[in-house]
Image (tube, rainbow, N blue to C red; front, top):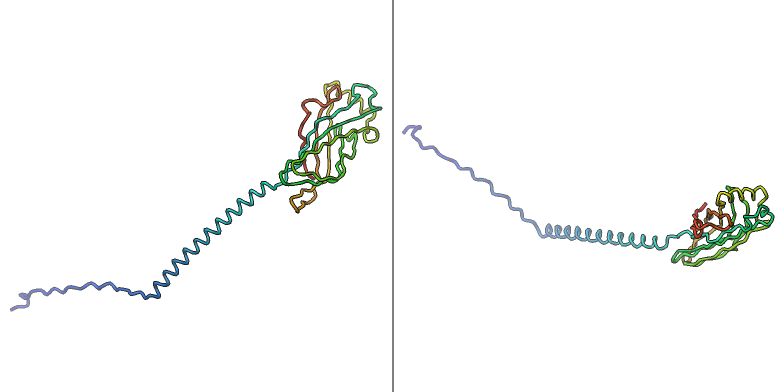
Length: 224
């Protein structure tokens, strides 16, 4: 038999069997510990974030409730008797009535001595003490009534003539400036001192009494 007549021989190559890894008990215990650690870490982070959120909300609410509000000043009465008299400056007199409101729920206000000054065309024409130092309870209103005349009011004939000229136009403009140094009190805590100014711009009519447009007007308050 020739070589060409021999049947071909086929060799089949067997695929390698996958290697089976046998993990030890220590390996599985390690995996379980890792899983528990991850879960505990996530739980702790969730709790901390929740506590921070609750703390932030509580702090914000406390800040809103304890944030000091400035005292509120309203001008109710202001009059210049004798404004219709050419020689009224000889007995010049100005009276006014202002209320001071502490609108805070839980915050009191300490006032040092309070003073009032009256301006006409940005020139002071009088100044006087209004109140001695006092403490104002929360949700409390104080009435400030004052009459200025004599040495506390410096009005000469030239100034009175200017009053009369404005009166002929229908109104005379004044500004009442009330000043004091205040500090806020929350329970046992006192704030720092603030220099307070309340500016009440107003107009009086030909009869010398405050006009309805200025009556009960709220006066802007600012600190310096």
